[in-house]
Image 1 (cartoon, rainbow, N blue to C red):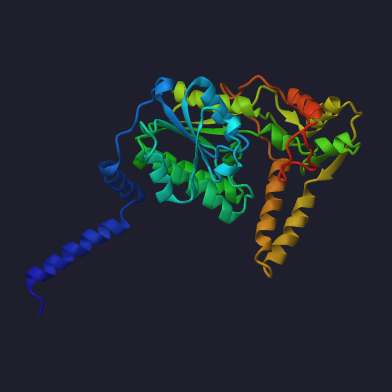
Image 2: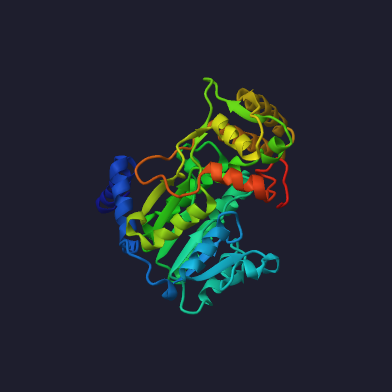
Length: 374
């Protein structure tokens, strides 16, 4: 027969466990917060990174569309710049004079940590321009989340005090896999356990490159294709030039008002509709405007068919996701015009004029028909 003492002990234990299991969510959250606060590092206070000549800044995604401009801006300002690349043999060192080019796999945490700890004087800051090229689920979580998280933790281990993340404006309305991966990464960066590193999360509206894909077909005399929303309107955006974006990101090391913040960022233009973008492009190439309007519902038909095929051919799931990405950018406004959200000097019209004269680098994800530089 169970003794009175043992019975009392069991009853007390049951009451304790029961109170934890059925306590209000706010109370449980508070207890979790207290446990975390006991182990979380002290929060860093915004401050300039220090003199460029005394500051080493690592750039992940250094050879990407925005990354190479960030590297150049850092080097121009006198920072000791380290460019992390997948294959150093494919990098022209003349493009990055005075830059320490290091070959490392950012998907390999141990190799990344070892490479950064070998940098003389340690690391003071870092920029991540890593991004999935395809937008597929696996690639997004591999690159936008895990590889970027590897970089954050590796630079913290190497002594970095500042981290600037290139995110995306579109994560404000997450409907796609890569957006959810980016949001998960943002949450990890701003979590209490990483409060020891100052962060700036920059969310640009759109790059000029992403609005330049119809250059070659327009030059050839074809019409500019526009997508119409269900209500008859068209998407608008105020994109930002790559050099202006890079300049702003490097400013985050020096301007304390930009630190420990999420920063929506657009270019100097007022919001431009697809028709207005097309008109600027026709003017740049010297042709009379011609337009074709396509209902965005067409995407729904295509995506529905691909989702159906994915039930039998799993590989089609990624193709369906690409269709969702296409629709998203065809109908969602990308506008940042609030206080402090417009930045830069280069307008979309100036960009179109330049690529009409010089050509643009081929990119299979944004260029309809690539053209070599003229």
